[in-house]
Amino acid sequence: PMHAYLVLLLALVPAQGFVPPTPFVNKPSVLRAVDDKTEVREYFNSEGFNRWNKIYSESDEVNSVQLDIRTGHDQTIQKILNWVKADDDMSGKTVCDCGCGVGSLAIPLAQMGAEVSASDISDAMSSEAARRAEELGVKNANFYTSDLESVEGNYDTVTCVDVAIHYPTEQMTGMIEHLCSLSDRRVIFSFAPKTWWFVGLKKIGELFPGPSKTTRAYLHPEEDVRRALEAAGFKIQREEFTGTNFYFSKLLEATKA
Image 1 (tube, rainbow, N blue to C red):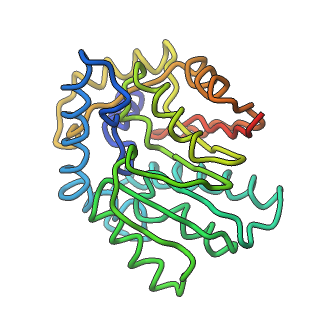
Image 2: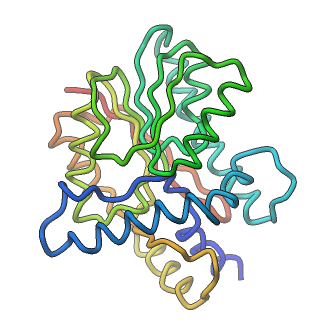
């Protein structure tokens, strides 16, 4: 059934390389955090890279589910670009894209004139992003391999899109706190919302084993994400929800209060 397939996306939604960094976790959660981190790194450096590199491209070598996920992700990226375009000129503005994947957001932001620093825990992903940027003649974006806790600096805008599905909710506060610490003005963040409907779908999806279920998938209560952003000193300004048959993502923009 269509809805049964929907939850399988929870194991497929692109985390784009970041999982809970150890410094943010309580002792009982350290082992799971390390396990998640190892799983994601290994997955997106091997089978996961091959799968998602095709999804995040114009390749015809995708099935209908993957094509639908591509459409949903593209819609989320476009919503962010629309926000940015509506606000101001990005020329010379600094952007930090955490979990950049193959550069789906970082490259267009650089093409808009921003100075972009983009990282991913997967060397395969960040290398592919750098290759795509070079192919397009983009010179104002730097792509490198890093986990979240190692990202440093201060930026006008910090983005973290379709990454949180690999962060357990109890570690969400620390993750968002770190992202906000990098931002001088704005944070753009997306996550798969935890509702009774999506929780039910996820439980059904767990009954269908498959090779795509390589990493853990986490839904997050929207109120917890909002509370974490506010606790870090940021106020939510805009929000969007993207939902297709096999992709769903809540997008929040928050600015420093």
